[in-house]
Length: 211
Length: 211
Image (tube, rainbow over all chains, first blue to last red; front, side, top):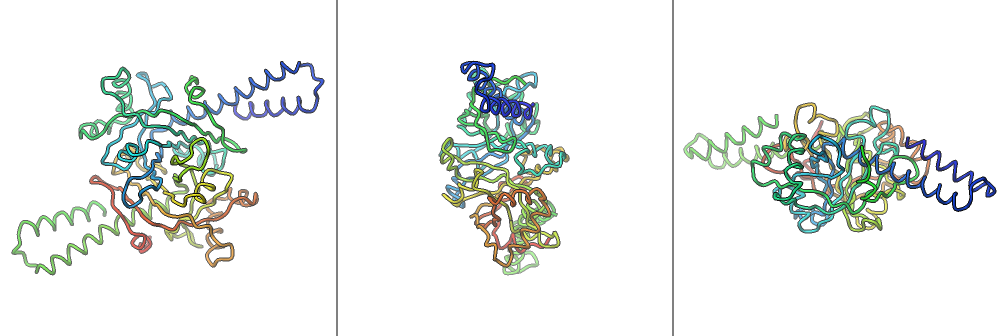
């Protein structure tokens, strides 16, 4: 689908570029290009959503407050889940943090984080004979702010139930009373899924996808 | 081995703590404790070395120079290799960067990076029924500076050959003339491999390990 849409867009653009006397009006041309670009954007959004839903964890970057590496980027492995009560994808990234780990103190000092997801996390690239750094090994970098969820909020219990269903070990973490449920307020998404550089995807396009 | 060493250290400390009239002299006690702690440190260093050698890639954190997420931590997926000419582990992290990707411009602006390695990259935790965020799912965060390797340097060709042997796709990246071979100058290593928090490992203990 991805390759097909890219090909369509390339062909249409090449066609419009080489022959201005084509059957479409300039306004119609502009509409088609806009729609194809929108489809292309949604396609990247879909890839991001699929990566997030398939992943049980993300490589989470924060600005370190740890004395040994202060102001370095720290990267942690953080279990995540984006499921609703029925296990379907919502795109909303939920995770448990503790201030006893690296990420907890970091986000409270400087609330800028990036979650990295890659198809190689589930060995899809390796199994397809692709190098993990090859652009065709799809990845998404989702940046934003950590939000500590309110235990009395409407989404809290559903999100927590879905999380512990996917991560049964989390029941023990929660029993230690130092872990708190968080959500990500998405500021920016970059998706790399083919040659030609990363694509920027808006949070609204990302959430608009139905998987 | 890890659990055994931990257990030994705990038992010896408990024994020394509970009975000061034991057969060992205070000086001997101190020597034993020091040696056990050294073994413990080397054990964490060994886990870091094993993680690095098993991994084909790392989640690499940098401080972003990208306009959309400037000064955010960026996390990228970067192929790595630490092999010598015979495929044996050296611990030296080699990788290819391009300034057309996220990491390239970032390290040149602010040369602080962290490589994160996890046993979950190769699904070892999943296969053992462990959650990827559980402390027993071993991980290493290796922070330091990117060094662009000198093509005329003594180690360059050996490192490049080992890299392309492990990552055949890299031959095409190099043909594009935008990729350059890099090494990591290690400043700090954190290893988390069990309950009780992360362990700091020095670069010299890390490199001293023979796998």
